[in-house]
Image (cartoon, rainbow, N blue to C red; front, side, top):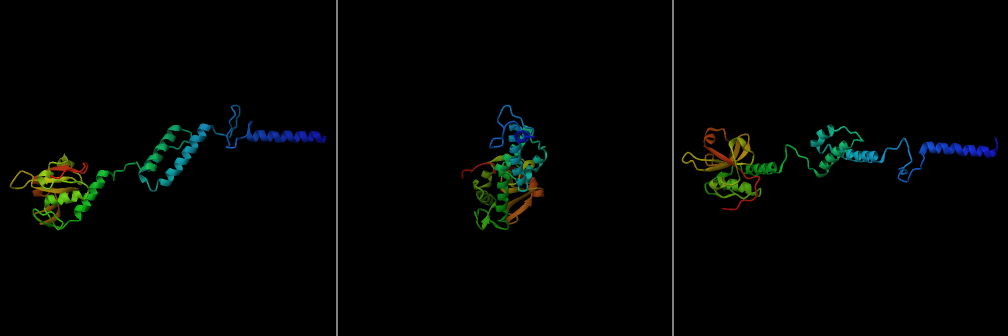
Length: 244
């Protein structure tokens, strides 16, 4: 074979390999094929490629956050990660948004429960403090000055006396009481409000007790308090109350 023919044959062979490897059109600098007439069996469509890339980014971020954000684990488990299915892409984006902005909810936290827990902490810090009728603290309290002080430490201003505290906030029945609710009682001598405490949950409440002569915890199921309970008031979801 002549030298010229060998050169032509070699050139055609190399060109053939080039076409098979790269398709009919050379790659752009970003690796894409923009020609309307091009085809390459190993290149995903632009739409699928973008969807896959977005999912990969979000899934990587989600996996890195799972240990510190366990409440969203069940959502991830319920999603089949099909790379080319747009509804799944939407779900992944939704979860990624929750992680990024910490907007997921849990049964253990809410602004109201946070306030209620703070109220409990402040109230319990005064356990054993002496009771004295008409006292305003800080070494002695009566029932209403005690509740007024505790709530003031959580940004809620209550009236000074129990009969006025019994008029503010949302009325709550005994069966609907929650931690942080004010609870009111009458006395053996009168059906009017004569005592106030702070509900802690599970039937327990904390109050400045004249009978115990100190700040103490009692239970609503006890014979006396069960008979004299009047109602509860929820003020943890309200703003400040004017001083009376």
